[in-house]
Length: 104
Image 1 (tube, helix red, strand yellow):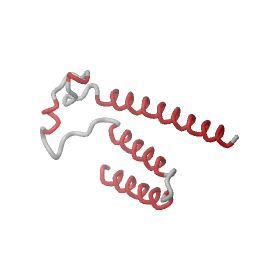
Image 2 (tube, helix red, strand yellow):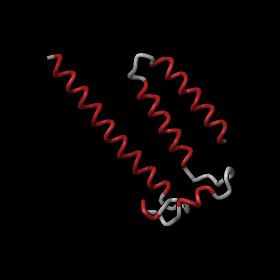
Image 3 (spheres, helix red, strand yellow):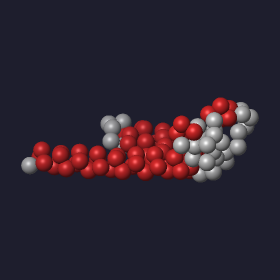
Image 4 (tube, one colour):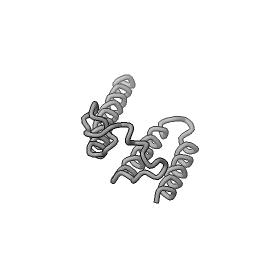
C-alpha cells in the first residue's frame, strides 16, 4: 500500500512539473517573441547581437520582471521539498524582495 501512495505522489509531482514547464516556456516565448533581440532561429524577427546595444541601460521588456519573479517563486517552492526548506525559503523570499526593489 505504501508503494502505491509513493507512486501516486511521484506521478502528481511529475504532472505538476510538466504543466509548469509547458506554461513557463509558453509564457516566456510570448513575452519575448516581438523583441528586437529575439533571434529568427527561435521564431523571432531580430538579431541576438542587439541584446547588448545600450548596455547596461537597455529598455525593459514588458512583463519580463513579473515572469522572472514568478520563476524565482516557483524555484523557491521547489526548494521546499528539501531538508533545508525553512532556511532556503526565507533566503529566497529575501532575494526575491531585493530583486523586486532594485528593479523598480
